[in-house]
Image (cartoon, rainbow, N blue to C red):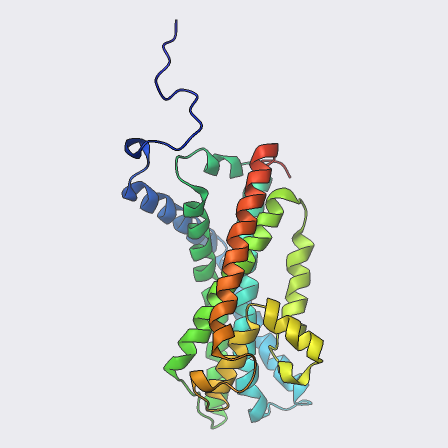
Length: 287
């Protein structure tokens, strides 16, 4: 005869003594980061190709906009937009495909068999995706700086741009959470990430300032696209010479700070709800 323990069949929160310690949380988080970096190293050939093609794409776009010439007035604004575009493309896709890849291989359910809450693993995946996106984004920045310097210009820098840069990173993480949550419930939605790339490129203010777009497009971009407020703020600071508190384009500093917080909040809530739906249906391992 089997003797049941006092905790058998319990569905409520675990006692304090039964909960994982801080070391366990840190270990689970670091394992997810390590797994993501292993995938980055395993795909080093793909990363190398991207580190070549993204800068070439940037230079070709500047040539196209300059009617066959590398016009100096287009290089810096275009560079700021292209670096942001490259980062959001790589970060969102790597976070999205980490979930989709685990679903396709049938191992996603294993991450829910640990005593750790899912947010620990989600945070690790997000950090790994951010780090994995940096090589391609930095290669665009490096080529852009070299091009500007080779043409006799100077690449400006202002520590104030760290605020909009942080806004871009956090807002992008929020968007990645939304897409990852959707893929837990709605299968075969890869087209969304590809379609969103076109939206970021065309309507995100990456190459054409939002002030030059229709009012409705500019409004929706500033409201929903994670990189749009940050790009406008960085251009105001580095190209326009304005201070962080005196931004002339966009909705000002308050929205640069608030938008990523809103996107992160929506991402956390939506991911949690969709995760519960997938667990209740038992579809975490289905694709």
